[in-house]
Length: 156
Image (tube, rainbow, N blue to C red; front, side):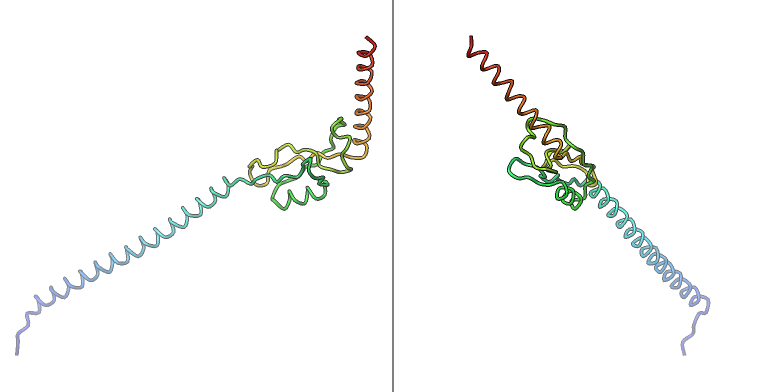
């Protein structure tokens, strides 16, 4: 039968246990470090996504053109669907508005195609029957003045 040195065996077992314990602590530390790294990655990813979202620009759709006559109600619906805030205002009488239709959109404070932040307030300028009537009066007056000037030139 072999003789065992109890002191040497105990020292060896303690050394092995210490080594296993150290490896276990290292493994636990690595797991904790990996968890921290994953959490940090998620925080950084969320911050980057938020920054991209914040810096994302939306293009203002074309809601008025000489080629078509878009009514105020449709323009408001279109802009709101695109994520913009809408503030309608009535246009001032102008010769150029004499041929418009009632509630037609004629201008905006931000030009179509321009890129702006989501939720930007867009002022939509539209005409009413009163504006159209006053614009036609201005047009008729300008035509009368032109005719008078041409008549005076012809008389000279």
